Amino acid sequence: MRNSMSRKRILSDRPPRSLAFSRARWVWAGCAVAAVVVTAIALTITVQSPSAPSKPGVVAPVPPPTCAAVLGADDEQPPVGAPTKLVPGHPQAAVACRYAGADEGEPVPALDASAEVPAAEVGHLARAMNSGRRPPGGTSNCPADDGARDVVKFAYAASPTITVVIRLTGCQYAVSASAAATTTHATLGMLNQLVGPDPNSRDLSQP
Image (cartoon, rainbow, N blue to C red; front, side, top):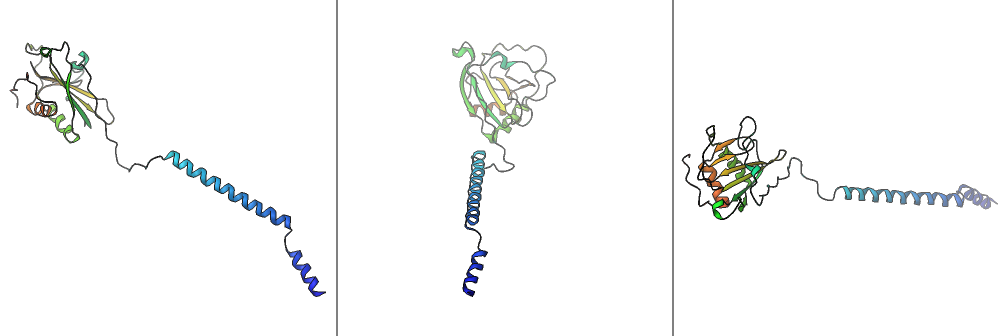
């Protein structure tokens, strides 16, 4: 009699079978939902971060500009406004373009050679150009100008490209949208190393 009563008490303490099954089903459903959420978060992170994050403080390099096939008339316009420097600010990249003159069989100055300016030399070339003197005022007579030009395009991180046009014959002035100046030996020397010497370019009297 006592054993039967103990067995009844044990059975009465157990939860109903349907209730235990319901609890197991809810636990299984919760685990499934958690797995789906974790998978969704992982996929979102993968989609939003396809590559490794960039290191803080690292600035992406500025690509150099490209040379046009021919030199346009708009590329050699007198500076607008008060003169400042041929190459203002701090350019990050540059390309040198050599255009053949008219006596070399070209009706318009056409691209003859080009070279990217090494990143370590961009600042040196800009300073060499800015060290030229301001040309005399008034109209200049340059009868020996055959149209040969060196063009240097300077690129900036957050500013428009600056184009400097250098006359290789005649008066040998350099002009950009912000200034005009005489061309120095240092400027021509660096350009000759990049795109080769111009056979018709005369020696400069200015060091």
